Length: 395
Image (cartoon, rainbow, N blue to C red; front, side, top):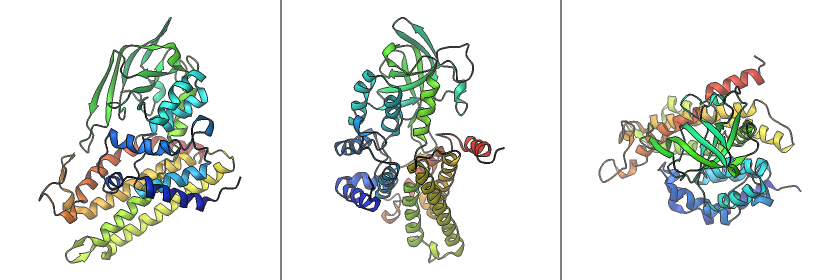
């Protein structure tokens, strides 16, 4: 069936106009932090409309959209100032369960993911296993009724909120690299699970260390086959990197930057009238256009049923570079107005801290510091460059 993408875009905009709460929208547009209740509120609004899991097929509760529809929906959400749905449930473990899970696992977990009844976190990285994930050391001893897990995970986003963790563990210590790894679902309320916060540059604690000490995991929480969990891990990473370019977010932040440059006065002159700043913004515009066109070419290939090689890594690398450059230029335009974010601590604006007209600036500093992480998660910039060198350049 032929899809009228522009009609779909118009319908999406109307849905967002009617359904996106204004306070959530303003929080995103003004770079304010969101809490668990904020994310869940938007999740449940999307769920009630059947739009919370764009990549899921209809038979499992998704909308059954094609790649172009998913792209349009996610772009319009970003442009409108909608919160991003935390990816660990709907974008990561959901597709893995659909592909590798048992009927019982799908029946138990998929409806709860859709309704926002379970908050998930990702147990992949370890202190000595980040980009080299296959070197993970968390062990799971196989016992009659399941597994006994011991080890440590780190950089675990939103573990402080999580009900469940999908976790890579080593079940065959004698096996090398990707062999001997299994994929488990761990209840975060289990005895032996300890979560400790890690404070980030912006003063937040959205990432954590998770310690697993003799944690009992029932056998029915094994996804796929024992010692073959790397297949699940690779499949999950392919979904994690879907939409890695974040073109919609970059467009939104570009519009914010242009608004700041057009209104901010320094020495009696608008910043946009400074030739140097105008040239920098024009270059960012060109880079963003190149990113968007590269993303659209990949989407066209995917829509035609073609695979992709290094393009996903190119998009991850370019998307990261452009996003960080835009917010850095915004912070430069903010200048001393961003000083309320001192020493990496995101200070709320109160009273006479800054003029009301300039209250946008302090959150930008926190947003800038938080955005440093995007060149690390989902595959570091260095890893993406290695993939591009090997797959695209044959080096």
